[in-house]
Length: 229
Length: 229
DNA sequence: AAAATAAGTTTACAGCGTAAATTTACACTG
DNA sequence: CAGTGTAAATTTACGCTGTAAACTTATTTT
Image (cartoon, rainbow over all chains, first blue to last red; front, side, top):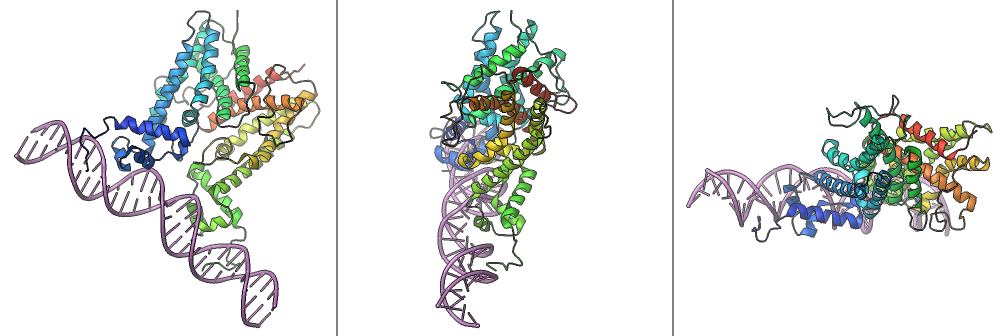
């Protein structure tokens, strides 16, 4: 049976492959992802996967894209939890808390995005950039709002070189955006530092819920960068 | 020729294997490390390596230990660059700068220690802990000195649960040490956040030397945690 | 109805870690 | 000095991986 009848065939094999991949990643980590074992789980032959993904890296990229989507959804949902004009600080905290929570709930997804857990895989930046920008966008929007309201205190912060960064050509940020992105990246660095250490088991739990240090860090950033009343 | 004559034999094969491994890691990253290709480079058969390392993970652990040693050396050297009583702040900055510089000069080593770049490898914490503690020790000593001199401003910082962390049993830290370690971990988190993003190419360069944001972050930590007058 | 295409199959190849059996060089002992 | 034992390598082999090539069959198009 070289080509199964449509009635037998899995009507959405591409999605099934990704689902199986996620399940396996959830069990044994992204590093042990294997096309052959995905195929075994699905009862198909390994080369059949090549009808849906040009190679293993293309599958990984699809998984990364999905992870960015889920992560971005959670970031934007958190940001939109409080909609009041005076709730910028709440939006900042919610977005920050959601960052860690998504990572804790999805450690393999987090490491897939921000670590380098698949042997030899180099993420195709051009392809991933929109999804990455969107997921970082929630934080950037909060920072932008702080800036608009004159609540952003980051005068001395260094700005990155807009030419040397990976913005889509022709979309180089204007000065105000440059400040916002630079602050966002510093905040991202702090948040990612703690979260990546925690997710990869290198940080002991702080406080009864394990998140005390993280909350302290978020509040430290409020003290440092945000002017209130 | 099953066993080569001593005159022909590589007298220090264990070290040669590690050197070759480092060379290959330097070229194509830690994820593509392969016993067989190391053996090819050395003109030996792959199973010969098993005389010196019980398996691939044991080799990786040996490499991680070497990396920790080199990293720790650089941290302690930086800390001891200024020895004056009033130079605590200089020691802090030097140690911080050296952290990033070592990582930039040894990106694969850095990712080997702090990332998860080898498929399926899980670091044996008990074995690595002394080397890890020593390398983190330089920063902890600086923080301890700040504390001794009454220059440490981190009263509200949360402390981690000494039982739940990976200290060697019977070496649980006393309250003062707990504060010092907790502050050190927060600092480590910030430093690691920026450095890991930079080393894995996810952060655009800030300023003419690419380190402006990092220096800003170090100075921000001085403002936040260090009392000067 | 015939031809083209789509979606699978089987087979095959090169690379990987590593277990097992085998070979040889050298050190130790009677 | 001969014989034995062990250390350090070899070859062979197994099962795993990604993936290229050739083949088969269901469905679609002409």
